[in-house]
Image (cartoon, rainbow, N blue to C red; front, side):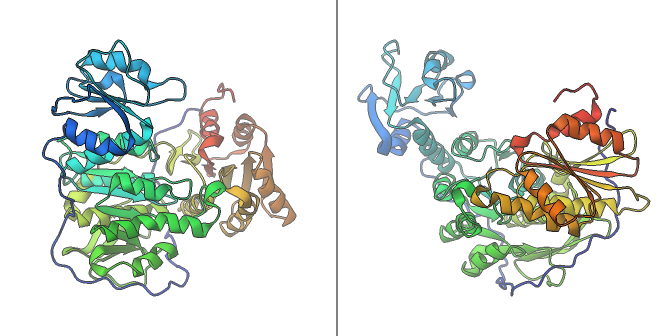
Length: 522
């Protein structure tokens, strides 16, 4: 059955009721819009600047006294090298970048950085810098390159929603700035972050960099490279617990981004609906923080934006003031459905306001937003069945948010069919992974799901828990994507609503693909 176009159905009012909130830190009044930008360290990025940045990791430089010359760009892909560029030879999964040094030189590279000794066939005039660690050298170079450009650099961190927030923010900023650089996809780790920074060019007027962590100490290392002027942490939730161990460690790592940015003179953007971010916000000086909240009982105030979700769940009304920028019940259409995405949008609006973007500029930029792969996209089959394709990734917080979306959207007028939750394993949850999978039973019960279809070894724990509790809804576990999707095709009726969710490694998009194409093999 081929799928129809993406739809954006109306819904009944989404409850704005929220658990009791701790006291919100009252921000101070600031009347001047300021984009914090650190001073440029050099007017020209040249060989001397490069060598100074790499000094801690240099083994050898040949020729011993290289001439100084301007360098135009930093490349890790020899195919992109042009005259005057720096080529950094990184070790890949299958090959080493050193193999492509001849190609980079032929393309015009003026300088080569590699952890391997100078190749014997390299032209005598070519500058070769041998370093102890190629990736570390690349990170140091990317940080120096970032400091060389006089533009605001914005960091987006958090356990959930950071890629969506990054994409929304980049789109919004596009309404103000002619060219905005952003992290591509989810390249938010030790290699992806410097790749983004090294891509900054003279055309860019702002950069949005996503920061992801999976181990203790990773955030501090990333911040040393990015040196953000503005930082937002979307939310704190269980993530990568194999190395981060527990939620307290996750919170300490994620909120470090807020603290470090503020202490360096930048602006920390605080999600006051998140317990951990709110606590960190209380320790940051008022002049270095702004905030946002969807909590309906809060009143807008200087340096705090309050968003109110519309009754149909399709827009957010924003009020408050950020750095002298007033929002008087400004309405923004939700680019992705769900209260969690309303929070992502509100956070992006708050960040954009710090840069001086106006509501009209933000709305203009938002029109260019394109949803990323497998992120809260709602599709409709020819039969009329609506499917929430939200299979990019999963952890307890994002699964909970997706189930809320399933409940809220399925209550739309005239849709009385069954609610199906198709869930794949949540990966990298460490020693508590069984407990965290079993706890989803509470959320499934609270959201009134009619059918629970599970895939993956870890989801057997949830199936057992649901059966142990004598869960009223039907529960089935499947050994393949194909058998799960075949079950759906045999049982779905026109008014039904389906959620497909799971960690990236579970490839739950195959369920959606199989629903559309009966010939697709698992």
